[in-house]
Length: 216
Image (tube, rainbow, N blue to C red; front, top):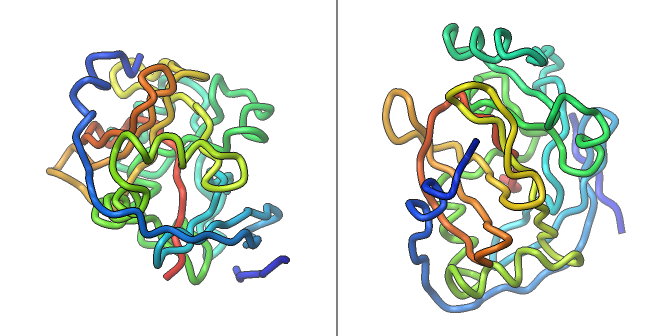
């Protein structure tokens, strides 16, 4: 069934972000499809929320405005200096985009032009916590979120804020929330495939993380 809508993170960070999110398992799910640009995304219903079950892979905002691709270290750092939106593929390889989607800085997430397709939005930190709670908390959530017929999490890696290097492909995945912690840091959730846990932390807005979106 298909539906259309218009339109080096290192282990020190992992230990810091592994906080417990507990609650009752409420989820029931169904798969649909939503589209943006030329991309189509599978979706999954978890609890009362409908999420994409693939990482975002758009190069324009919902109004068609182009989001700059930052391939070089200088381009990535310039976006941070200007507090402007940027995206990249992991290792600047489009083949990684096909599997894992794009990595975005938080300025792209927060841009008023809107990163998500019409009718969808980047989830807040509270909505992410609600998702984890729907799956029964941190430990149980890992097993559920990695299921290929559900949320289908993949270890997409990240682009580090400090030197714009790429790291942790196949090991950890990080997703931005729409919520900032302070002037320079925003909240994100992560899955460590070695530790088999889900966690929450905040980090530099010039870090490159993946993005999921949730229905309005």
